[in-house]
Length: 541
Image 1 (cartoon, rainbow, N blue to C red):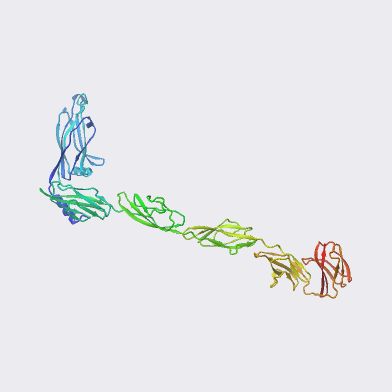
Image 2: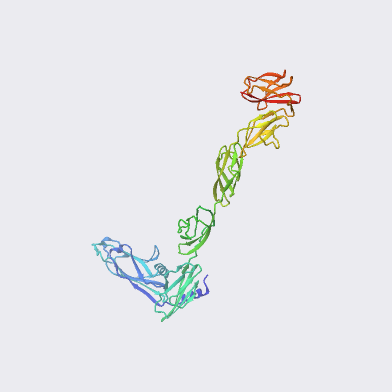
């Protein structure tokens, strides 16, 4: 929307009379090159108050023998690739005679030509004659355009600016180019600061994007003149700089930044960037960094934006089974800490490949890799090693007659019919009841082995010593002589596992016993009579 001042100045401009006339005459344009377009330029063109005129003389030789006629075209340039025809003539049959001509140029064509020429009015001319060099035509001076003159009424007020296309906050320096030596100047700057000036060559700052009018009123000896140029100053909007969204980054990783909004970019700081002058550098900072990008658009305007790349330390992942070892054949629990999610590899001897807690049962010393991921997606690994300890040798229980004895070990626990017996943790066990006895031995790592069960069946019997049994020879090979027997008593030969291998009834107080079928080893000969039992060891070789 135009301001009231702008409307007033527009009215003044329409009422102000032209102060002078622009006129410029070019040199001759002649020769055969005129058969194609030849360019020309009127320099020092000043603002017009309306239309203008072009005057010239043209000459072309003509020979009737070739027929046809001569033609001329004159065009003014009104755009980058646009020419507007201002004169065209055909049907000329005058031979080598100069023909004076004048043509009018409309105000719109003048305005467009002035706007494109930026201080000059450019055009082109072409003549088609009707002869051939050496046959009725002079090669070097035919055809000919002479006295090509542009004339139009111009303002006394005139100005220019080196760069009237700026970014917000920039300044525009105006240069007076008025004619007739003005005695005073009055400037009006729509959208500018200051909005007015009486200086000859003022400098004005523009903040708001848009297209802004500039008006100059000068006073010369001929009176005042007003020149208003609509949309003379263009203030481009700042680019929509965008540095991208904030990102989380794991220590040691990289992230590609992504800026937008311009045609060139510069990142600050450049630390950790692969290239600070591209929109999408790869960032590898060692610590949390705020990156600012300066964006420049096609108009040279700059704006900035920033993003924060937060660097997170890798999770400290640990895994432990507590004691760090397991007995062969047993299962142990391993727990990982320090992360949110976990994965385990390889998948051998393990209850699950995910989760913080798993059970493992390796058959030999084994190590798993534990990968932990935290809430930011950062990953770290550790190792979970579990050693496998062997259990002790299976113990051997010997029936000593009145008790049971285990082979040597570090710790013992006796069982009756599969149930642990409280307090029975010694190498020797004196059974109180009959039944199947076994012992579990444990080594320093807590690994254990269990013996085969041994039946003990003489608990509660009273051993008499009045007539001790005597066995000879010791050791025995084939037969032994047993003395001190009670006639009618039952006689048992018991092995180390409590098994009765020989059972006979004593027929007298002394008797021979065949032991040839017994394997070499230690045995017990037991005589049971009523509530009494007597025992004696036997060694067979």
